[in-house]
Amino acid sequence: MKHSFLDKYGHLNSPLHRIDARIKLLSAFAFILIIVSEPRGVLFPFIYYSMVIAVLVRVSNVPGRFILSRCLIVSPFILLAAVFYPLSSMITGDFGGLPAYQAEYRIALSIILKAFSAVIILTLLVSTDKFHNLLQGLRKLRMPRLLGIISALMYRYIFILTDEALKTRMARESRTPGKLNINKFKVYGNQSAMIFIRSMDRSQIIYNSMLSKGFTGEFPGMQKTAISGRDVAFFIFFISILLVIRLTNTGQFCFNI
Image 1 (cartoon, rainbow, N blue to C red):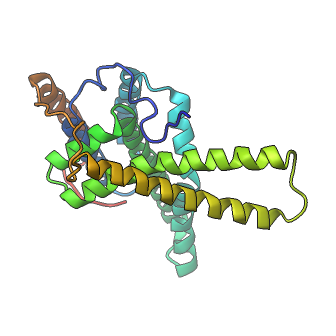
Image 2: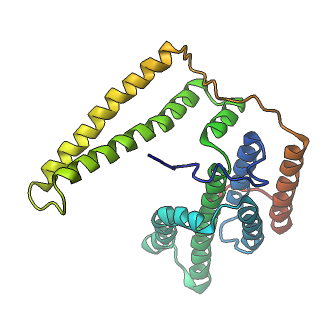
Image 3: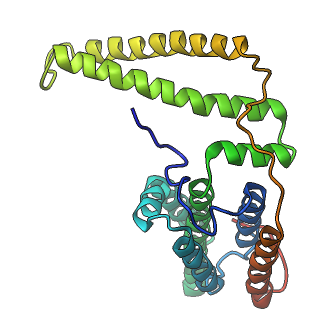
């Protein structure tokens, strides 16, 4: 059974895929910090930020439809945050005249632009490398060892849970073909319980197998890679462009959402 979760397009070959995971992580976090530091209500710089994002999407070879689907998943939360900001001003009575009215909605629009820009950048981050390479990059950036092990095991066990869910659903559909009309909640409840029980049993078997092969918390598949000059050049060039866009508009940093 084939599954793809975070790193669906991590196998592609593009200039972004060939950059070291540590450089991509630092670049993504720097991008998010810079756009968050834009003052509230400032919209013009996002024209240039969107150009940078468009170039990255084009270079990455990640389908735009996939990125759009990820944006649609989080869009309800982003839109709610943007809508409730001017709404809260109206409730508290801070809405004072047409200029204030326009300012509140400019702030709401800037929230939307910042949030969607961050979502696209994070989607590119996890789509241009394998998940275990990103974990390795985080480990090299001094992420706590225990957190890295838990994240790696959770990601691997997601596949086990999905496999058991598919098998259980196929078994149920073979016995009760068509749409369920009687005892629907009882059947689905029993199916869910069976999925978790079988997943726990299978996970325990896999973990015992790992221990028998000498697993100590470090995954042998992790590669020891060095940051190349090309990676450093990309990081410097990318951050320089972002700083030029940021400092050209206001010349100061103030972290606001």
